[in-house]
Length: 133
Image (cartoon, rainbow, N blue to C red; front, top):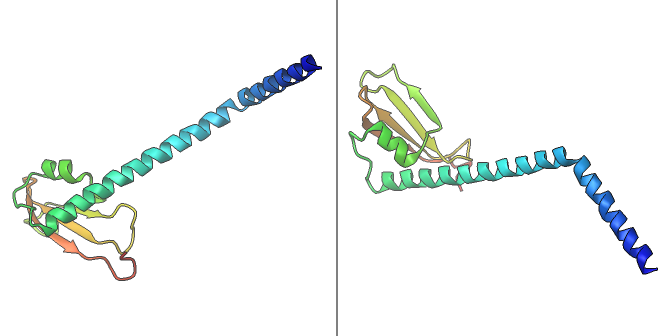
């Protein structure tokens, strides 16, 4: 009787192993999606942390005219928008930073650079009342 029970469990393990192998590609795809989602969440956390650093530097008066664009990118990361500016002759490029997951109503900081890629001015836009939290 014990042999029959052991054989039954061995047979069950064998069948479950075959089922796993049969769906190996689907399982690997699901694992890959889970890994990608974790990477996206980490990226958003880093972006939020850098935006909070920019807000803090703005509030404490640590933004300085003449700071190189590369230094700004290194410290605060990539902005949500980088726009060449042709409307104002002294401003060559504009960066826009905001909370990475708040698409509407987020507070924003605009950084303006001259033709030599040096920070010349900045502007803070508070969050709208609808989406501020």
